[in-house]
Length: 274
Image (cartoon, rainbow, N blue to C red; front, side, top):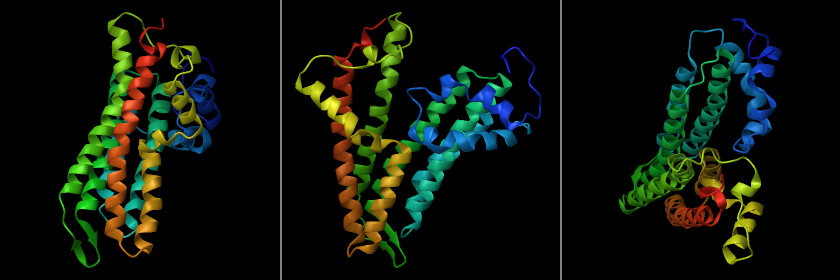
């Protein structure tokens, strides 16, 4: 099915896959590993249902934003249920994130507004998780009530949330810088994105490709890691101490990651490659 052909209102799954999951989408460098592994295989089934309704692609994106933001407050539930629900919310967020673009491609309604909403969703979701992790560590809610209120950990949650937002915004700042300088979008090739030379920063960057710990601050990875920590916390002797230690480490690590990300961008051709 070509882009010029009229699109049926009730397409088959095969028609959808051909139109909304072309090779250039499936092979995108920015595609999340869950999309490659299973989300795209499943999302076409949701898209199959959505294109039969009146909901717009932007309406699907609004649902994505809602579930992403709810991942943070979900963490406040006592015991293991908070992390479990947070994982569910971020998985559903990513699922809807696949489908909103597929609905837009099928109906040919892709627009800057949709991309704008999509960015809002990802920024809010990841910041929400960081903020509410701090609140969970500040006033752990358990079956026996609220334990050990200490607002310092809420502050650390704010530090974590701001760091996540800053780190995420660095890539957007590259795009803005290139656009304002008249350079256009960043080329997909590795030469424009990589770092050259053999200095310490380059070696650290290469090491990060083998152990990409910086990716733990994405919503999917952060909630999965939080679920693992939650299992350890509820089975240990001091649940509150586990959460406070976890938030303290994350609040420090995000700024190490952000600094490394900033330096990597500065030393790469991203701000000069045509």
